Length: 433
Image (tube, rainbow, N blue to C red; front, top):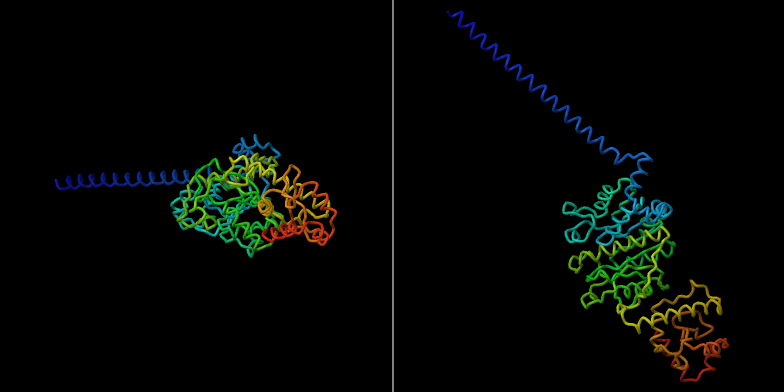
């Protein structure tokens, strides 16, 4: 009886052992299958991601052409070829610069260098094209590059965390000879140095003023720095440029707002935009940045925008003022031709900027410096024929007065020819310029 029971127990344990063995084998093979599946999944993911970094030449052309299909329709093959092969440098990739950068990258530029010494902070998140909360504390140039590579992994982008100044200019800007330089700096002093450096090295430069205190998107304009009047940033930059370099303001286009300035704006214009207390409406930096990108792309592709408005003053609706601007431009054009023809002065040696002409015009009340007459045939002439062309040596005269004045070859002849009160008046006014 006991033998029977022991046999039954033995069979029972055998069944249990068989069950445990089966269970262990099941779990072993199941885990192996899962691991194999996961490995295959990872391999598939890697296989799917691989083309993002290793395109063949044919694949690159297909992908780029598809991504930029509408750009090719606009600029055609020739224009897009120029854009693709251009090298653009952006100095300052904060609120304005990041938006310019984003559009340039999405429009086919394949080689860029971005320069900025700042880190991402919370105050810039409201207006930056790329920065997120996770990026706080990260160098802005690193943040920009990481997101740019997601947009276009083919782009060659050099990100430099550095401050621009004349000591670093050769390394930061001139290296590899860029086709286009974009100034989105917030410091007036740095802007002036960059303008000087680009003029010295004959680099194409596009600049902008900050968006502090601006809210009206319809007030964004583009014109040469010399044409901008009644703007505190422009005045500050011109003043610094003259003091530092004693040269004519360079011919550089500025993207800026003609929205009237308030007292508080005047107090803060020219101060570094990174000051978190400055009032900045988030959409305006983006609009200025997009305008910069549009001008850059059309310039590079040789289909430049023709700006069909006159900008000298914020009050552009004043018809009398607009008329005065047109007349002044005509006076300047005639004077530069006169200097070149009569005195053989080279264009680059006419060191008189728009502000100086404007001041002379106002000091003489817009009438002839000699007779106080007015007319359609007014123009600037050189006062002292023996002295060089300068802002302190030009007066306004009618065409008949010009013809008489041209016969005077020395300063003594000028002094003897005019009545004493006329001569003294002109001399005293020219001291005020």
